Image 1: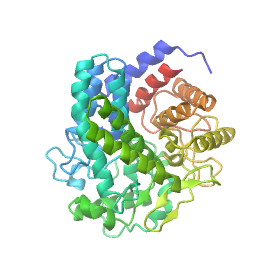
Image 2: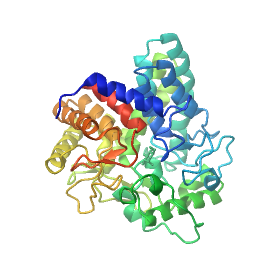
Image 3: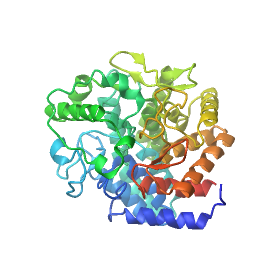
Image 4: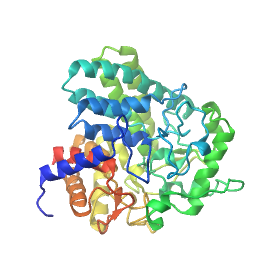
Length: 425
Ligand code: GLC
């Protein structure tokens, strides 16, 4: 690797973040994603915090201004009109004052809140702003367990691949065979006009994404009905781990602010979730797997979703096994961490979530591995991440075999994560 010019990379990352800043929210990248995305914004705030603490809080506050009355926080907020993205507000038709999508995304807000709170220099502002957000994030957590865990198992289901944030993962292939495509309205994709179609989901997958959206729309986006009515109900270990960690972090902030009821409720959610998560462990894969709630079976697909639980406080032997699994992947892939096991015949090094490296996932895994004392693997992932951006710029994702930049360019969350990695390197 060429020597790292930290200050140049830092300035470049800040430039990307500022370029995509729309005042009170940040777009993931120009063109491909012209609105506010839920988990992107929470990661973005961590980056903004390096140069503008006030702006970082605003990023998350803006997202939560669009929380639904039932507690859900949507995956997209359509702040402005833009025909460059499909499916837009008219397809979702959620009837919100500012248009939003009708599904959610990985709840990284609890973790981000704790980070902003603990790192804040302006303590008075941080306490005031954290207290406000605390209530809203707690309401979102409660929403998850009420609507996505109807039998009180301690684990929540996603009802659409977009909720996982890993849109076309191999994890969904089997369940997608049960999702019909008949009757969907004719449509024109926009994503493939901004990025290489070979690096994006297929038409067969898009048809199913849209069937699910239309199905939920016909049910009036009534969250008390959607779970049971969905042919796609997947318990994703990564998603649940993010929720569990979020609840645990929320409890810490609540404790510090003297909000003991919120602290107790979220600690209990995290403990129950953590115990339940172990059901998803696969000894043969050395990682967690998705559970298909409609069949009751684990999904035989070794994706990054099953490595992300290291981000929650999983048992030490599980964290050690995950570190070994990642080391094993490193024997085949030049750059860590591929979003799918390169030894699997279905691995595709360029197609979105079926193989490429994503820096946000690297970040969550590094955080977890470091906490578990697996610093050698964590350091290797940090080095890989910084090498990728030096070689290929701030891309949306990267080919783990060649390092080639893929998808959109000048990407916000990639830049935000680079600021974090520089801080750790
Ligand atoms: C893609 C990703 C998703 C992300 C969004 C905006 O849909 O799969 O995780 O939130 O783009 O960057």
